[in-house]
Amino acid sequence: MLIEFSFGLIFWMTVSFLTVLFILKKFAWKPILGALSERERTIEDALNEAKKAREEIAAMSSRNEELMRDAREEREVLLKEARDIRDKEIAEARSRAKVEADAILSRARIDIQNEKMAAITEMKNQVAELSILVAERILKDKLSENAAQQSLVDKVMTEAELRKS
Amino acid sequence: MKALIRAGFLLFSSLLIGSAVAQHEGHEHATELEIENVFEEHSSDHEAHGTEKFNPGEMIMGHVGDEHGWHLWGHTSIPLPILVYNTERGFSNFSSSNFDHGHKTHGGYMLHEGKVVATDAPDGADAHHASVNEELTKSTWDISITKNVLGMFVSMAILLWVMLSVANGYKKRGVGAPKGLQSFIEPIIVFIRDDVAKANIGPKYERFMPYLLTVFFFILLNNLTGLIPIFPFGANVTGSISVTFALAAITFVITLIHGNRHYWGHILAMPGVPKPVLLILTPVEILGVFLRPAILMIRLFANITAGHIIVLSFFALIFIFGEINAGLGWGVSIFTLVFTIFMSMLELLVAFIQAFVFTFLSAMYFGAAVEGHDDHKESLV
Image (cartoon, rainbow over the protein chains, first blue to last red):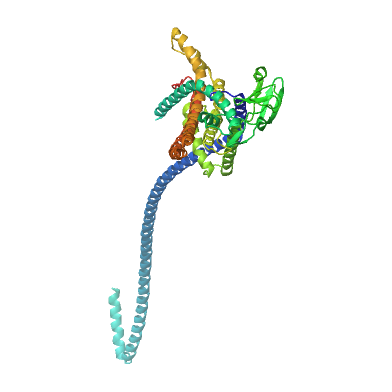
């Protein structure tokens, strides 16, 4: 009674089991297993991506450092260049200024010389005029007498003769 | 770890098979005698005294076995449809209540020892005095919806509902975190995929997944519903050898369909073995092909039935002692309760283990059938 094969039970078992198997295969196992493997793939992808991102960040930071170093070096170079240029400019300006100052000085000296010469000439002329005036007065005074006039003419004559010789 | 589990299962199953066979052998004569007695006693008692003497064997077999009509309590039972096909009489269907628990004949059929047999007696005749028409009975195919069939339908409906709603959860949530029933089922599915299918079958595991999952959840669910003694549960589906036979047969057929040249080569002519040895080895291997599903069938059946018989035996003790003395019956019932709770816990464990073992071994046989030349695994006979 216990170990007894019943045709009806085997029949229904086989039919219903295969039906359930078919239905579950189509509507349950396929979506479930699909979703599970999909999820696993998603997780794996996410992990891989995170790893890649981490690596990228590391690479980027090293690149950044390199860039910073480069920038710093370039700045140094630029600063140095600027300093050089400034120094050169200053030196140039200084020399140019010196040249100009020298030119101005020399021109001023020449001007002064010229002015001096002109002043001297004028003074000479005035002195000459004054002397002539003084001489005229003196002469007028002295030569008011005939004798005096005669002696002076003599004297000048001698002097002129002396100078000629 | 895996080898340990496997060894444990082997030991466990061989013990159970051994005990089941021994039990069966010892039982054969006893049950037949008993059933004759029961029947006569039953009918005569019924008519003469109106009270039945408690018969533990009948009670246990009645609960473990199949029946036409679902017995609820006392004389109340739910009638189930009788579907019979006879090559001469054609197809007939009627309610099992027409048989009046095997006391009456109907439509040329009656119940004899719980089975539908053909008879020439007119409708409503006393079945105990009607003669069985052996000739017609041989050409009668009984596909009635019995208690086990109905119980199976119920658990299949539950299985469909659970799995389809879980699948719906995946459709709704996509790759998001599982929720509710989904999060309970998911680890089991992943376990079967990774530790049963992938581990035993290898890279070709995917085509076997639907069967392995269905068979696991089917056995598990039927094992569990078999533990619930309230209608519509409590039918001993996986403890019925017809059911385990059908399951094992499906595993067998799948193994044969997927068996590759390498598999058949190993069975028919094991490579690297001298010819004289092959004369012994080949028959053994061919026998093994049939033995493997047979072992699957017996193991599941014996495990589940044994558990039920033990629990029922504890309950029978109450009535046996109760018949001697009512107080004694109450006293024994306390111990019975404790033992039954313990046994139910054990059966709960067995329900999972047996579902797992059936699936695991099926996967192993599939793995042996599809394995290639390069991946060698030890095979289990």
